[in-house]
Image (cartoon, rainbow, N blue to C red):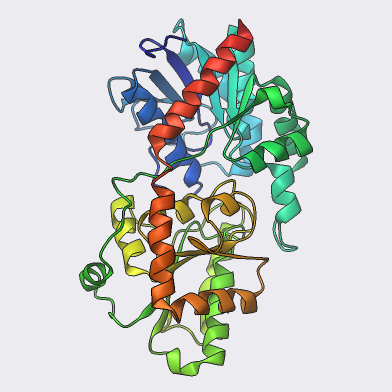
Length: 415
């Protein structure tokens, strides 16, 4: 790999979701942000990146050029329409075949696949073209199944088997944290020589410390309100219901806060349990919280920045996160975070320094943690200030640099 990166060509695969999609809508989330930001930052370093994604709209051009170095290419596999994620494994062969046609004679240096569906297609292409395969899991079936609640869907065997095969055949596996690397070794028999730690980043130009009063005035939010914010897809894994129950518990203890306490939930339904979100309004009403809880559709990132600024504390009650970009974005805005003590959230949030980590999903424990920060604005500001400094160390430029180091390793192993 050239030291100046000029002329290096990467075939990046994001089969099930496009980096052009709005995060928080449908299956779009942190992976979309990751792919979009990484491709952009690699391009700014002289790397040519083609991102291949499954066509879901017949009217979208086959190639959308994002910059001189970066393009998103549509690959036809199945109908040019939304397809449920659980049906996509049956389309990976068609996707790989069409990818080979679209690929043509273009001379790539390596394949970088994101998520297991992309990895299945990536294995085929890397093998056919004798290229190294770099793979980023983002989430893992065996880890999700270990951390799921009883009423959550189990990740299917086909995914577990697919991920095992990807690990066996990948040249390099990138992990967000050392803990994730250890999980790849423990659950999938990855070997240490395969692994590269590539922490994700945060867009520090969009998300940065901000003025709460100005943001509240902009959105007509009471300056005296105590505001908890949730940002994410409305699905069981992300667990916004935990915050609903926690708010109910706080008001059970302290009914005098009813006029001040607010929970703002920003997100859209997602995944095979997308109808799960339909029950949230009833849960809110059953608690008698229709005046205290506001549910909004997901916002563009520039607008989302302002909602972070409005909040006093951001809750991330996920059952599992490979890292937790919402936690990082919130801290970049100077907001303390209360998150589940699980997975990558243990790295995104420094317990007691930038926020609080809660063991499990007991609403009483969550109420305790949230209440402790809402009752101590000075402590919340202290954690928020430390969080902004912590988040400043996670830039997408650093992610790109670590990815380039992983690419170099992959190319050396091939040679």
